[in-house]
Image (cartoon, rainbow, N blue to C red; front, top):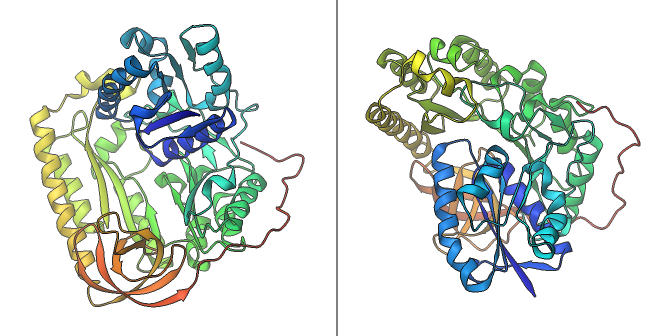
Length: 460
């Protein structure tokens, strides 16, 4: 039996792409192995949003070289770094067998056949035109036994922020027809999935025949689906209609990841973010009014070219004002072909040690705020969707609240059940407690005819 191992870097889109790769490899009679040293095929599914991710990928390739030498294992790189570097990766890594971009997952059988049959090193990174792109359909059986699942609804980004490499690695925005999305969501519900997360590089700019707000509402109406989430969003697409969807549909989870990137208007302008801090706060205020208690998370880049101490102080002030549940903060690193990389010297590079010091200050502040938010929940009762045993203690259970807060607790409820948990302690990153009662058991929908998409559908 041939075995494969996929090492995934990066975002939820990459995690979802790795699942699709696994399904394609299954059609070639490959089976997964959790141990790279036992694999006949190793694929690194890569992220290029930050330089550190690329460095990790190259380090992993060095480790997997020994597997290749010992077993004759095929070694490939997919994802965003592959799309960005193309043939240069084969020159940089002489023992690499093939390179393929995100649009070429369906071509894996041909790529592997050429590598094995014709003994050639293959690069397959051609874009598929928007009009011809077909989103890979997930096999629901891959998700049987899972409680939550990702569903891709669009890919690419049209914003071209000056720091971001995504338009160069994922291409222009393409939205998946909404009937196709609903078909996949319904098929997931039938194998026991109770929560879906709609994903895309700029998910709330979705234009697959209905608005994104309408897509969320329709997904929430699929029998068996109890929670709907989404990520990642751009502030300029936080519409009044989307805010209203949060107000009227409780199955849309009260958690919103809304990247602000900086608290300084001059920095936002250089980043090519088309909003001011005041406009961001106005939209956020409307969202919180529509859904009181909604948990907010964000992305922040520290040390963007030209960022002064005054600019950074504004980011600190914004963090204090908004009181995010959590932040994903990183130091700026120039990415190939981006506007910021080309103009870094004009705007003024920030010394690395200054970036590090500012990042530490920001993260210390966020840990304090996150800790205050979670400590306020001690003694309260929260509703948790059980996902399985705790990774830290297999005798405990693990799940998340609707606000996306992780909970480890004493109890015996099976995966897929909703339970009431009393919070007994908290850290900035998680809650701990004990199960009080099972609110609803797991549900596997009975077989039924899935809705089929119409013959034609408007796709952006």
